[in-house]
Image (cartoon, rainbow, N blue to C red; front, side, top):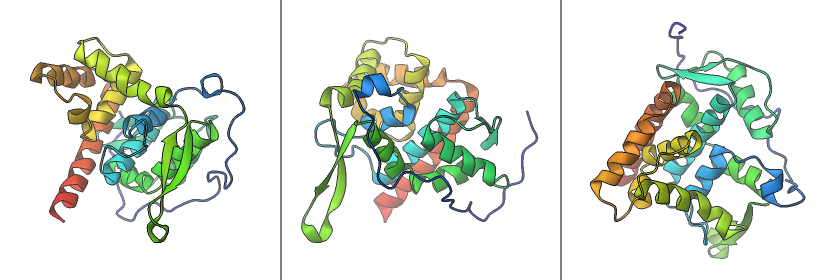
Length: 245
């Protein structure tokens, strides 16, 4: 393990060299044949109602969760790892996915900034729109305007409710039946726990089910558990601020 890097206090700068396309073009064909399932996409589904697209979480919790999911995707691609609350780039080769490429470029361009919480805060500023854009490109989401004309906002409604509901149904079924989770679902469950989504996911279950969920998340590799610990800290602080503000 490398020595603990020095962390500077100023935030990383925003970069625009490889931003999301201004006019995304959705992939031709079905999403299932065009798209490798990615953690941030699955968490986006998990954090939203599969019919209305309404958030099940505080906006800040969803944003931090998506930021953590993007970092975890890079960990899965063996581009970065997490060590004692710091992010370390292990392979700067660009991933095929444009959003993973963008995030990795930012990490590489800011070697002075290594604290995981710093990057969670920075990426959370744009993660929601970027993940939604990636899913829109693949035909997974349809943006819709809602609210009165002077307070309109964009809601991303699933293009297919069965696809959108699958991650929720799969996790809920496995946990309620005490079935071991795959490595991918352990990561997804960890995001749910540390964004405080688990009480909704396991609504009506006995304490033993929630203990089983926690045990499954504890089986995650140590670098991922380090990421989850920082995610839980920033989400907890954000939710507390929201409730007391």
